[in-house]
Structure formats: C-alpha cells, structure tokens
Image 1 (tube, rainbow, N blue to C red):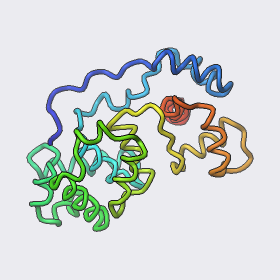
Image 2: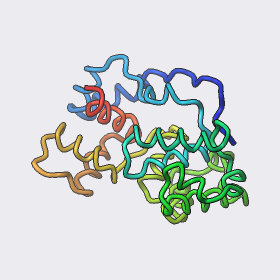
Image 3: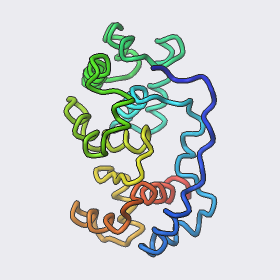
Image 4: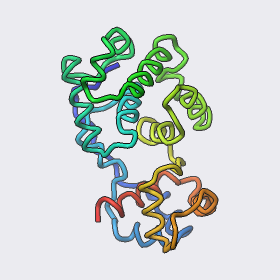
Length: 218
C-alpha cells in the first residue's frame, strides 16, 4: 500500500442532484452554490497522488490540530524517509519509531500510526473491508484506536471513501464558518449544528465542502 506515482484524475464538478437538493433546502447554501457554478468539492486533492486507505489515515493523523501546509510538510518528510513513497503498514511497523519523530510526528501520533498499522497487518482493518461497512461501522472501528477520534474518522470517510453524507461536527474551522455564514452571535452548539445539518441530509458532505470553500476560496 503506497502512494501511486500516477497523476490523480481531476476532481469532478459537484453532483447536480446534490446541488439542486441543497439549494432548495437551505437559502444560505443556495447563495454559496450560485456563487460557484463550476465548484469541484475535491479539487484540493488534485495535486496529491492517489492515496490508499492506510496512507490517507497517515495524512489524517498528521493533520490533527495542524494546518494543511504543515501536514503536507510532515508527509513530505515521511516520504523522504521511505524512498519517496508512503510506508505500507508492514514498512511502518518495521521502521524505527524515531523515523516518525524525525518526520515531524509527535510520540502520541506515532503510537496511533503503529496501532493502525497493526490492525491493517492482522486484518482487523482493510481497504476491501471498508467498502462493505457503513459510515457508523467504520467510525466505530477507527475510534477504537487510541488517538483516533470522530474528527479523524469522519475526515477519513470524506477524504478516502468519498462518502456523501458526512458532517464534521467537531471541526472548529467549520463551526466558525457556520457562525459567520448563518449569522450566529455565538459559536454554534452541538444541538444547533445537528438541527442545521439535518436539513442537508443525504448530502452533508457536499454542504460541508461549500462551507469550507466559502472560508478558504473567497
């Protein structure tokens, strides 16, 4: 399981059915959607090589509480130490733990990656297995790993598996974006986020992508 050297296929334009549903369901999203007629939700991944499930989890763990730029720097350092590619689970377990620390991973994140690698090696987690699991089953399996919380698990559902109905309730940047776009005079509570995001089902992932775009692409 390594990063493929082939270029990634260019991300597709947002699903028309999802756009239509969200425009009708939410006037705030309707404005964001109308302002981005050629929006590609996964365009930010265009300059990344394809990632398999384990490599994506490395990316997600690296990015916990870090900027995208810092995350990519750590990933680049890690690849340099594994001959220019992301390590497979077996390669990561065989490496000196210092290799992860020298790449920029904290000791805690290194322990998390080793625990993930062990589960891929012994078959408790697998790329093929994820395909047959529901979002809830995958989140439950991943959050059994120390250091993997709902934010990382749901990010994996979005990034690796492109699941259509994922809401990143624990993402602070998303909360701030919702506060601004929806005119809250406070950071929205969990209950307020549930009430709001329920109207976006079954296209919560697309709604999240438009909200992030309003924050980072404006």
